[in-house]
Image (tube, rainbow over all chains, first blue to last red; front, top):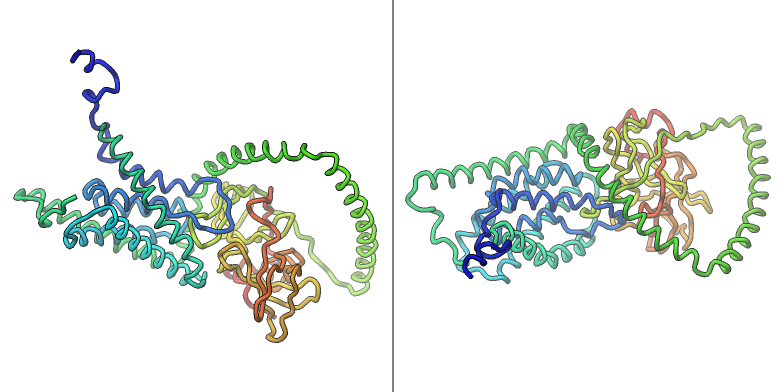
Length: 174
Length: 293
């Protein structure tokens, strides 16, 4: 009986971490950045920044899978693919990682709601910075136009967290 | 998850150093990011090559995906066309007859116009298309309104050229790759188009609002010249956009201007046509058609 359990493919015994398990989180963030290549032509830009959401989800799920400085090349990739002002995501993503590193020393306890709150605050800062830079680049608008995508991004964070946890289980072979 | 009691990863010097250096690297990454951002704000043209190359890599992906979605969409709308075909046929025939009468009228007016212009010795340049491409994607994650079209410098497209569709104005080219380019749509807040009210000829300014609609204001302060349903066309002022291209239709009035919807919806138009700037001088300077005579 034990032997048959060993031999069956997909059984719990012969599963282990995937080969490049260390790099899968960063890869998944890059792939999420590429979602902006979907052929969606809209008149409003209300979709969230998928790469940023997944980066936050990974960072809040596990503090060590994406070293803080990896956010810089990932952000550069996001900028180049999405066609935003180059350097914006680099600065915001790395800043968010450093901020979370510093916050990790302060927080006494963590639960799901605290993580969602942290993510909401970081998404708000992200959108504020983007809105500010858009204004500097000549696209002045009241912040009210940026509120619907902000709300959508905050509500979409649990989805990103779920995706990160599923990818995490898959990459560790659990 | 219980937080670590301190930032020290343990007694291992190696682990402590690696944590410290990774922190330094993150700070360096942040500084590099801020520097890159400052550069793209101060000198936006410095990344033109990078952005163009990225467009060349990414636009074919989007284009291929777009092909699939339009095929699937076409199946549904094609099936819809067969539904109620007899009624549609009758309606189209009636429309066609009305169009015929209008065309005859228009032809007479055109001829008269030509004679009058010849009498006035007015010369007008014919606009010729540089290239045409499909709209494959848009910036659906950002408040800025950009679209990607499948025509690039290989087809003769250059930065600053106006882009239109049969239905109306779309915007102007801002990033150029070899096979694809990025267009600043007229619904972007940074795109300011000198325009005219078609009904009365009043000069107005059209500015995007970032949510798909367009804000139109008269140049002269006074009575609100707009009415619902008014058509806004380009005036040709500034030399970038050709005159008489439809921009938008007024849907709502506010206190001193109006909100309009673009005539050419980038999601619907089949082809985007890139044209030469109306006057060549407009490309020599950075294309900023805000000044008005």
